[in-house]
Length: 178
Image (tube, rainbow, N blue to C red; front, side, top):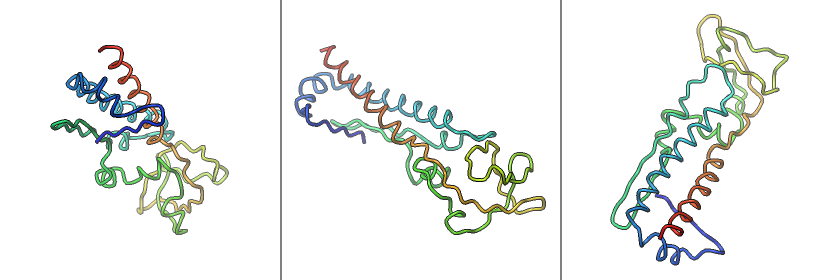
């Protein structure tokens, strides 16, 4: 459900009575469009800020829009946590940053970079690696012991700021098109 809070220069009831309530059906359309635009913004942001070669877009495509409307209600949500946990379990780590499970526990992770490359020890901790990591326990894998935290992408916070800007545009539109 979309919820907005305005303080201190706005009175929510006054905004509703003056702008939203008078054109409820148009407001519902605008909110549904806002959901789609917000989803597109979020997916574009994630894809534009991913820095590994061979990125699959899994995180961005795991973000889904869920619309709902009822008597006197309209809203939407993006990215159900249960679905993200299933299809992109690293969503939280990518947004907020931090240490992976392997880095926290000190355990090694078998695999390779790119098409079979060993980790480059001179690049350790620099955060400049661009090759995709492949988890592999078979022959030809390398044991890696990550120590460097993942930098946060902050896609949730950035999208929230974009949502606030878009919501202001909708309110301005409703105010000027009475």
